[in-house]
Image 1 (cartoon, rainbow, N blue to C red):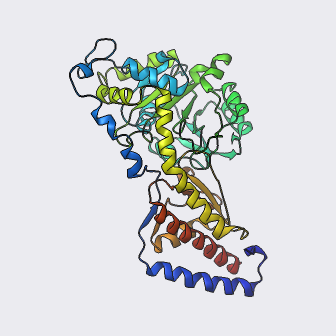
Image 2 (tube, rainbow, N blue to C red; image 1 turned 45 degrees about the horizontal axis):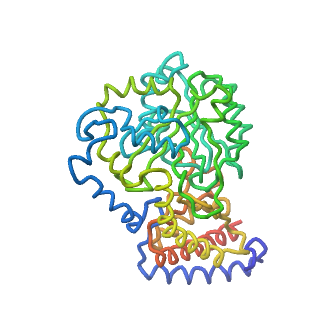
Image 3 (cartoon, rainbow, N blue to C red; image 1 turned 90 degrees about the vertical axis):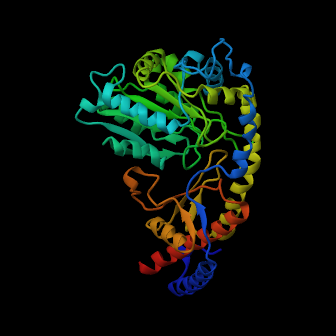
Length: 427
């Protein structure tokens, strides 16, 4: 296709008229398609239904340490689950704390506890300090940013490079400003662009010298086993690297089975140093006696170990990869050569990140909505929902059927071109 930027005005007018005609035809179909959230499809959820039959008798409720999973106790989680998540996260069992069903819930609670009680190494709780800042790699996960908004924490944009966040900028902020209390990280298949942090980036994180003693890296490894290809990238273990530097108190890891088993009924875990673990247990002990041990046990009995989870994720991949392929094929078919958009082709995770022409993202989302295709709102991948270039859109291919994805992606490519033509004609 011809680059829109190279078209004459007359050619753009003709192209715009053709696009509007095609757009009106799509509108007439009355489509109701949704690519807004990274939800597993019903077929993916069905993969874990056997888990519900894993506890069938009284004997099956007894843990390896003799405790009855139906009763009180095991604040840190059952030993079997701690061992499973230790394998998954690449840390020691005593560095794992098992919580409820949601890692997002844990991240929120971790910030809330810091506001009320602070962190080891800090002089006073975050809530008693005048200024609080978080570094936010962008584009990034909207719900991370939402947590900061709830607690009134100022967010600082940090651009994402091909190998992870701009670490020179991260080092400048963290090492020199004691009001910087944390940074959000999705280190493997980052949401939404699919980046996996390079070894160098991970090592530079471990070598940070924070001006604030209560600075923490919120390491949200949500997609650690969510590979779409055989040649998937390897993520260096941050905890190992921090231990080499004596900086293990700086990292708080998060992980869950939300997109492995059941999104609303998985198991989530925190990984942290002994000092952080002691602090965490002391505060949570008055909040609950224990989390859902039966759910923890169901997961362990069903998956058994990391190898079991990896085998299970191949089944997820068989359902997800064709969906990603369908969207990417439609993008190539509709957008190659036009120079109105570029997109990622990730090797894992749940999203495709699209950058449309500057100043066009909000318009593309609005056009899609009018044509019956729901997308994540423009700006959602940035703090305060403000994309300074109004260009990034997150695509979630996981939930719709492949036929619906093809239709939605075709509508999307059409809207990208229509918005670009409108912008160029207005200049």
